[in-house]
Image 1: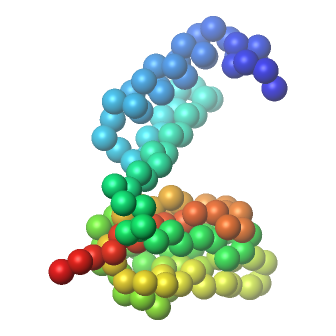
Image 2: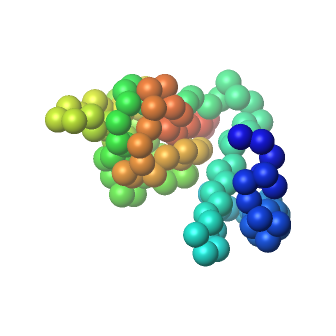
Length: 129
């Protein structure tokens, strides 16, 4: 695939450009907009002040991510050993386990989303008291 202008009309390219500008100016971690049959989704990458203080949790399998709790959100305090969800593959479920306690600093997938092996699911910031 070449440039967008090779596969999209000028109006579609202009619409995508405006949507991306809106996403850049927004304060949301995930921005999704649809115009006609065109959908643009932008997810901000988490940039930690000190990456060593953030633990990433990755998918242990290919399948569909299912959150263990609807209340799983950025800022929520979690404990080490907690099950954050599971990956469904055919008739098998593989748990997604939080290895260390802290505060959820990033959610990178949604319940019901297809994920790849090793895909980043969430990040945990260590909490110092």
